[in-house]
Image (tube, rainbow, N blue to C red; front, side, top):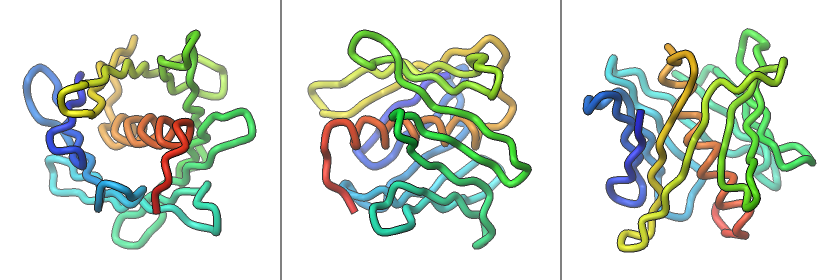
Length: 157
């Protein structure tokens, strides 16, 4: 799987050259976004609270998941069914991103590639077992973008 940033706001997820989902930010300097899947499902992502450190994912105004950064610099992803996953950055320069389950098994790895000519990130996505939930993969991309923005000190609303 690969993620390609097409216009600084849109991240297109492809698998074997075929589009399987899209993450689109409302504006360049916003954490508000929408995930669109091929079956026409739409999910809204927006920060809540004063500091915006908690993020809700909704479908038809029903909360599906919650993302929250903890004090370790990790993003905890909690779903409606109480499943919990952790998004972590590793490497000498914190340049490799992983989603792990509670047993600390790596489920998905995101390898960012910065495109200097477009000033955007693209990602290679690797895994041992192919994830069936495309929403889960796109939330990982959102978490990676969020982590990069927070760690770089980007001010967004």
